[in-house]
Image 1: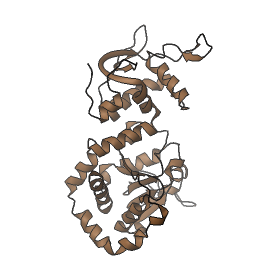
Image 2 (image 1 turned 90 degrees about the vertical axis):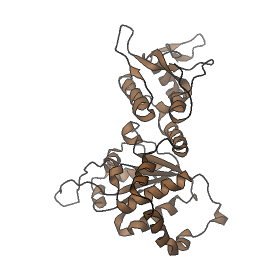
Image 3 (image 1 turned 120 degrees about the horizontal axis):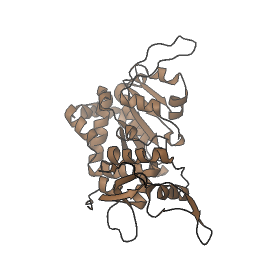
Image 4 (image 1 turned 60 degrees about the vertical axis):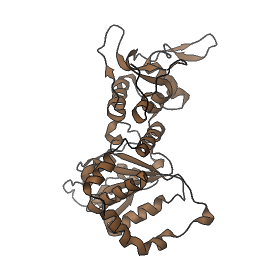
Length: 321
């Protein structure tokens, strides 16, 4: 029921153009799970002439793609899982920032503020180079997890056409305040689970936190550097990888075939993830002779019973002091 209300609320934002909520919806699921049906229904609410279909690659890399968005009410992005680059244009569109209007062989016009809500559809979670809170707080993930067998699939576009009037009335029935509360509520059970799974799948640092780190409010851990060493069996390791945060993170990235971020970016990225995305209390301490330290996180060992930062933030786990 929570998911149905969430989809109803988002359809309401499309119908009324509630871009001020700064939210976009991401539909994740295999082929035949009716993601395209939801997109089609969304198009019908505002009319196909008021919709634009594009891809993340075109939006980010084509100088002229954003001009097509001028005056549109809905932006549909497909095949998003195939793109893994920067998403500055998507952030601007969903964040209410102005974007350039530029056409081929025409002198560039002024910037404009997009009035389109955004629906992204993909077979798996989107992997981009953007893992900060700027994107995470705008993202609403809905999983269409059940794929309908081909022999049972129906032509829903034909079946639903006579019911579009009822769909519009159903969408109009939701008050604006309810729309705002539902889309801003990240603590519902459905959204917690969706957010947790999506965060772990798309953010290697969050996956590392979930696997290797516990949240202990008053514990102080060295951040450190990743200095390579070799043990007695000539296996490459990192100095203090079982105690310090950064070498443990680099080791995890190597084991999972992810590229680690630099030690200069690590501290701020980790604090951003904890403070602004997971909303847990950590503190970067002043640098001393031993280097930078962080209050609130501890490298996990076999005897630890404390929850991971991700489980604590998105679940019902109690904090260990």
